[in-house]
Image 1 (cartoon, rainbow, N blue to C red):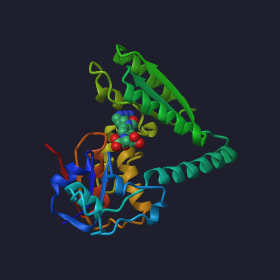
Image 2: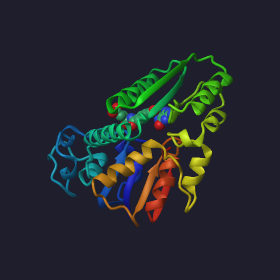
Image 3: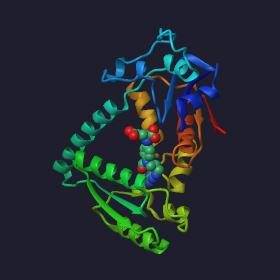
Image 4: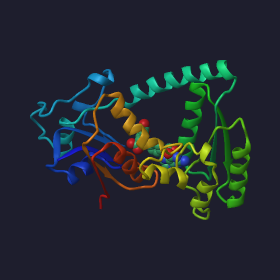
Length: 264
Ligand SMILES: Nc1nc2c(c(=O)[nH]1)N[C@@H](CN(C=O)c1ccc(C(=O)N[C@@H](CCC(=O)O)C(=O)O)cc1)CN2
C-alpha cells in the first residue's frame, strides 16, 4: 500500500484515486489542502500535530472519502515551517554580508498581465525583502518579443550582483518557453527548470545545481517533521513540468518506488 501521496489536486481527488489503498500512517501532501472545519490545522507547533489513524470524528455528517484520508494523515503546518526557513535564511544572509560583503540578488522577469503571476512575483519580492536578499524585477508587456526577454536574461546572466534568475511561467503563447528557459545560465537557474538541471535530477550520481522549489519544499516539510521516507512507496498525482514531473524525479532519490499518475 502507498505511504505518501503528493498531489497537484484536491484531497478528494486523491481519495478517488486511493479509495482503500493508503496505509494508516500515510502522509498526504496536496497543493490545495482544504480541511473540513472540525479538522482544520490551527496554530499548533508543527512537530506535534498528528491526526491519529482512526481518530474519532463527529458522528454526523458521515465521513466523506476525503475526510477519511485526512483522518489518517499527518497535518503539516507549512506556514510555521516557512517562517523557520525565512529566519534561517535571514541569519545566513547577514553572516554572508559580514563575512564576504556579498548580498545575494534575485532577478525576476514577468511577461504579460496575468494577475496570478503578478501576485506570485510580488510574493517572491516580499520574501526576498523579508530576509535581506536584493530583488530586481523586470515587467514586460504581453506582446514583447522573445528577443526582448532573451536580452534581459543575457544581462542578468552577466550581472555579478544577480545570483538567481526566475522567469515567471506561463509565458504568453507566442514566446517559446523552452528557448527562454535554456537561456538562463545553469549557475543562476534557481527554478531548476534548465534541461541540464532537470537532466541531472533524473540521473543517478549527478547533482543538479538547483531543484524546482515546490517538490523541494514538499521533501523539506517531510524532513522537518522527521517523517522517514527512505524505502517507502510514493504516488505523485499530476505531471506538470513545474511540480509533478520534477517531484517524481526528486522522490525517486529517496523512495523505493514512485508512481506518477494523472487524474482524468
Ligand atoms: N518561474 C516559475 N513560474 C511558476 C512557478 C515556479 O515555481 N517558477 N510555479 C507556479 C506559480 N507559483 C509560483 O511562482 C506558485 C503557484 C502556486 C503555489 C501554491 O502552492 N499555491 C497553493 C496555495 C498557497 C496559498 O494560497 O497560500 C495551492 O495552490 O494550494 C505556489 C507557487 C507557476 N509558475
